Image (cartoon, rainbow over all chains, first blue to last red):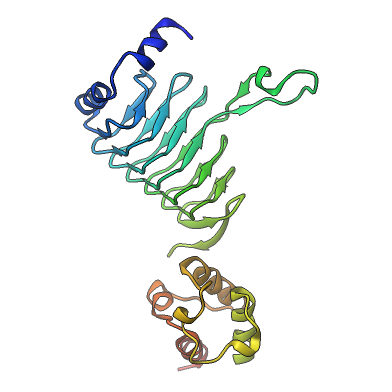
Length: 175
Length: 77
């Protein structure tokens, strides 16, 4: 890990990070959340990040829109292709948004040494993600979609639909 | 039509067709939660060729009101 990243992660106290993002973007981050100080990370105005969340943006952009509410204990990490969350999204507690995958093409090398790949995650505006849901790399969720709790989203969820399950499938179209 | 509705409800709510009575409400069936309700509506719409509005979906409190609503929608005015 390079010294700059190390300093950002370990030497800056969490309340200072919360204040920094409040003055920079007008967003409210709990001092109990672990949000990386990263030039790749941007928030919209009035976005809230609850306690015990972890947001990692050291390898790719994380762009979070305005008036987004992120519940307690969420985990968001990005890789090269980034994670984009639109405006007015509601993200329930314990949601994981993971923007990369390990390569596993070779059997003779441990998976952890085969490197990662990233296709990116896109969550459009006004999406509501239920508690405990996992959003995997390559997923995209259309605007106005609702994801039921404990689902696993790995592909495209069309706009204004309600999806549920592992993998999440559309069960209803909003009207 | 009534038999068809009972069959679909029984299938979606994982009940026996004999348990589908008109006085059965959403409160009586543990698994009839908001998500199962939407799954039921989607199944009814597909199999009966109907289309419910959001208000109609919210007004369904049990089998009685569901059947009454379907009757209203399938009876020509």
